[in-house]
Image (cartoon, rainbow, N blue to C red; front, side):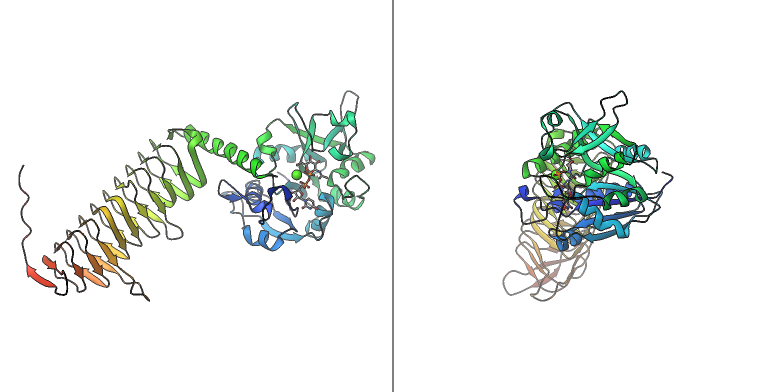
Length: 473
Ligand code: UD1
Ligand code: CA
């Protein structure tokens, strides 16, 4: 685009039909607030600035939205908030932004509750605007347009746009018009500002309608351009929990299709939820009912079993996550090494770092711990704040007692240690390489390499001991 674009996002309305205490534009779609989708879309358009108009729940809205990221070819747009108190209509909303809109740009007006508006459509609208015209995004699917502002066009051959008439103000004939206003328009600031000044509220709702700028522009002899879409998902607003859920499905369907286009095999695209960014290598299989949140990376050949919830994690090539596994890396992240096997019913928490071919079995919880290649904890165990060496075998029912009630301490289990079943490793403690801990032991002291430690009851015994050789079958 040869002209700078300043985006206005309207987000001051109440959204009464959501019947929620939370401001409407903060409700989540595919893991992001509705208005965040709109802000991020503006960033992808390389907009110069984004002004969000807030009113109802303004503080919450402002705290709940974040600066969009830049794109490879442009910096992130500047994000600003302007308050609209009280809310006297959409025209009044945009009037509040006038002082912060530079005169040399094109103003693109978006709705904070229309989250799936697409970049290509907006680009087409900006092209129609050409830096000089008022341009509207309209919708015509030939169906019912109840509730929407209707596009009134001239009867002659050029069918030029004359006005937008709100449903509540429309007569019978106007209500039969199937073309409606999406809520999105673009106009040069220098044209828009005086038009906004001319708005009045003499209509059925006693509101200052933004849509009235159209008839005023036409009265001044200006041509109003329209770009029409048939894609209802793109222009769908969220006004109720039902609409939110329907849009979520539509959004998930798109995400699922995009993944399958890349070659990801989804057992059922209708039973996948991506609430963030899911990046997949080649030959990835994902079974039904999996939820991905935050940033998740799946390497080549990764298999995810049914009913897994995976957030903020990187899973390396060939790893298998068996059904019902819960992984949440939060801020620290979780990493699962090449060829590792996790689950079923495993739980990986922030800072779990599993090396190559690590096995984590059912009802095993790992938090802030590093497991080196080939380490195994196959059943009913807890590893917290632990450093676990290569090929360690960590028995069923064993735990690290990492918390003394005030502080967390580390447990170090060196390479090739075998920890029997039902052991309590009271941190800080180090188990020397190649040692063994007898089942049922409570370990309170570090052990030297190769030792057998047995500490059942009060006594702890340290002996030099040889692990028996494996019997040949
Ligand atoms: C608006 C359009 C209508 C269009 C429809 C598309 C007007 C007058 N009408 O109607 O032609 O078909 O969108 O969805 O513009 N808002 C504020 N401050 C206000 C009022 C609203 O910020 O004082 C915000 C709302 O939060 C919302 C957006 O503006 O994000 C649209 O407001 P809404 O009341 O939903 O307008 P509609 O009646 O749906
Ligand atoms: Ca609306």
